[in-house]
Amino acid sequence: MGDRTQCAELAELLAEVATGVASGPDRARVLRHLSACDDCRRELDDLTQVADEVLLITPERESPAGFEGAVLDRIAALTPPAEPVARRRWGFWRPVLYAAAASIFAIAGAGVAWQATSDERELAAAYQNTLDVADGRYFSAVDLVGMDGMSAGTAFVYDGSPSWLFVVVRDAPAGTYDVILTAGGRSATVATCTVDQSTCSVGVTLDPGTYPVDEVRLVSPDGTTLRSEQG
Amino acid sequence: MRVSDEALLAGMASGDADATAMFVRRHQARVYGLALTVVGTAADAEEVAQEAFVRAWKHAGSFDPRRGRASTWLLAITRNVAIDVLRVRRDLPVDPYAMAELLVAGTDDSDRRADSDRISAALRSIPREQAIAVVLAAYFGLTAQEVSEHQHIPLGTAKTRIRTGLARLRSTLEVSRGRPDTMR
Image (cartoon, rainbow over all chains, first blue to last red; front, side, top):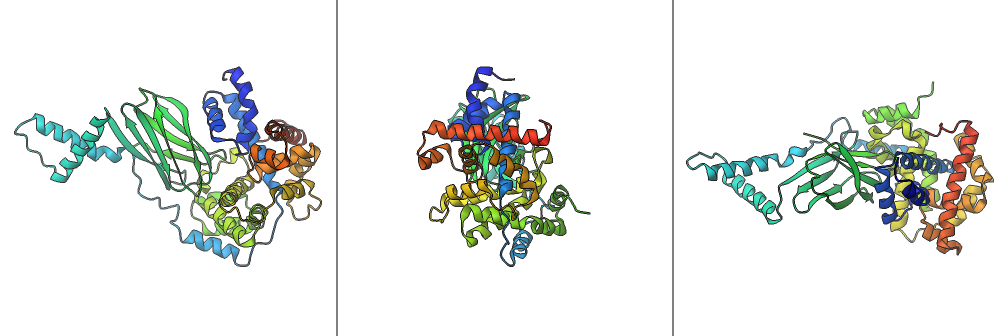
């Protein structure tokens, strides 16, 4: 249960969020509140179901000749869902970190043989320099995948001053998605990302101590979910 | 025996071409009808409807039957694609206000499916201006600001019509279902 005063204030906005026509700031206010208020989340779910039910009044119209075949041809041309694309996980940057750690070890331990290549050393140095410039401690990236296992975007997390999260969606149904971040067992909606023509991107600074991140999840009002996968 | 939409979506998610074909065949008239109602031209509507089915196929695995029916899920995808087109293509010959009036009036329901009976009746049972405001928002994606400007009413009034209309629809549908918790 959330703050009742805030519940009353935001009740005014729930219908607009449910129908998908709320302004960005209004929607962000509501979503922030929903992360801590189950009652309002249930209310929004109910109103969204009613709003979607309105679509049933659609009159049927005979589709153009060849419509079904055209749809099936388009689907056939796409990668079958049973064969998910290769996924990058939170460990995407792990090789770089290993290289960075190895470089530090090599500098500290004179005489220790270091087998990494020159390219790796340069990459590790560049990475370390990138972190040093903004007092960074860690930078990682992870694939965001739908429940069908298909890659749909990438989430980048930077732990520094400030820490931040940047989300890029490359292929998802239109709609405004809550960006829900889980860290230390606690989840919060930290941003929204409105998918237009299958793509969107959003960045947000994170509170100190947010790292390490357990999960990043994007959830649309119709339940479409993109989720990071732990390595 | 008729295969449920949910079973067809599960088949689509697992790559079953027959399930995909059956799902498209079952819903194409309604999806195309929604697309045509929103974008107004046959060519654009066909593109919207095709894209809606492709997206439904891509995301069939994420469909959650606890959150609603497959038909409304598919129509919501279609609406979102159509509204995306509408926002880019300002030249499309669409008058959402006139269409909303027709949809709410529903003088001829013969081209609607039976599962629309309850929502059609519910829309007719609430004040007309509220029903139209809800349809403009939920169906055509018009903001309260846009409704306010077109209908020459204060923004607060437009917001109230959408909010009150949706709340009344919910109450009406709950009564017609007999139980308040069967919306899910």
